[in-house]
Image (cartoon, rainbow, N blue to C red; front, side, top):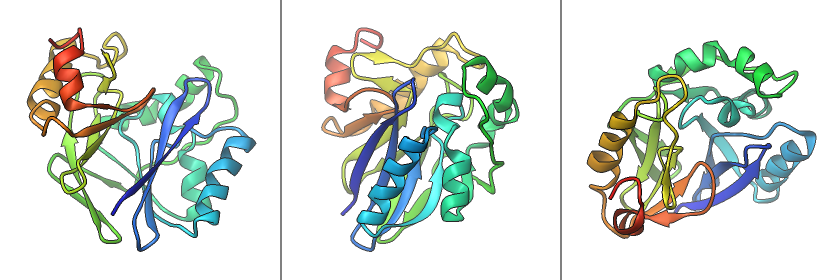
Length: 212
């Protein structure tokens, strides 16, 4: 069974997720940790629970979701994996870091890529990759059919959606991603967004004013 631990990091209140199961293997998604205190909070949790980080992913490569990549990669000797569409953002990360006030941040290149339909395996667990562009090129979600949840990054929020006014944003594409990928999942699927609290597919289908 997968346990999900969420941390709220940096000034953009990014949800960083640690997913682990009974084997103690874990994956880290969207490390937004940037301060020494945030680094310690993450590593202390992993150490106290005797976890073994084996994979590192970004749901997308907007600056607030990637500022902790270097720290996690070097601390746990694991390589970053993203969708190929995220590369333009990774290549321009230093410029975005300066623009958004993230000083002295170092970045890492990915060691591999994931695509639509890939199955991520760790411990006894699996996550399926869904490609969901519209908020940003390279946006992906991680879906557990067995355990009925999905990590969606900034594609969908409770009562809201990801913004589409940033580079590569496209409202129509985002609507297609939500309606043909996310809203096709079982109604009781729990949704873990990149910011804010959890929701469900059923709730968003019935109440989200942007996609009704």
